[in-house]
Image (tube, rainbow, N blue to C red; front, side, top):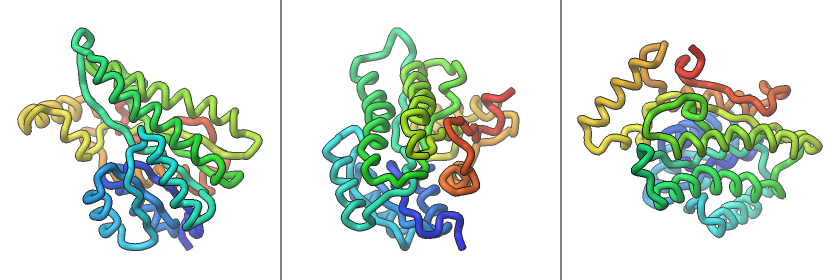
Length: 249
């Protein structure tokens, strides 16, 4: 029997990278999974790749009407939720002095507003004793240049886990954060303006990782299974770094 046998899980941003890897892991552990993605074609591809016990619902977490459609679909098909992995987000770099209002709004709308309402709108369907997992980043703890807005959004995510743990304690709902280090994902590989710049960024990042390599999306997924399952039944309000030591040494 899998660690998530019979559980219903919602994973936002489930079409690629960490979200897709986590959806695959959750299904392998016995969960019924709902994933979201902004592009229908990518969503259809992910559903096909996962193969079973998965439903794709197109939408953008920054659009509250899309979240309403997501949870209406979950309610109709499953009736309740045991696990929410608020994973969807975006990243862009902009040095102080070049930050635009558009850049600020885009990052905060996705990473903070979208995440907040992903969780809040799930509450009526979440069973008591369920698990909420928030995807943050080592950037909330480190001072990487040109990532001030992105880093601020992830610091907000870390703070949410603390306050929501107390908000939801009477329902025994556990709220925890995963903070990945540099992970091989399409999002990471889009940070450079071209392939050469991305290569340089990656080399610089790896130089700062004590384990000497990029992480894999499945390594984050394994941590998410732990936080979603009863293995972490006494873990609440914490930040689990899966970062090769970047923020630890």
